[in-house]
Length: 65
Image (cartoon, rainbow, N blue to C red; front, side):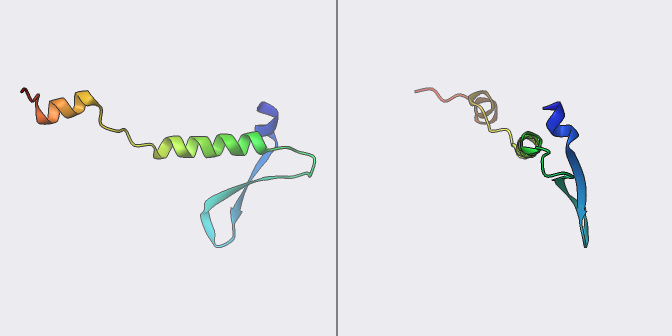
């Protein structure tokens, strides 16, 4: 993984300085693992916590029959 990450070079897209595209400088360099890691971190950052049963009970109280 260290080798894959070491092969990654960040390149900005012309006209949009907020977006950085991972590229490799040489054709024999492999960056697949680093790109997969970047995608996984992005998904983890977007994850929203779902309500649990405990959260529901605290919000609405316990119903008894």
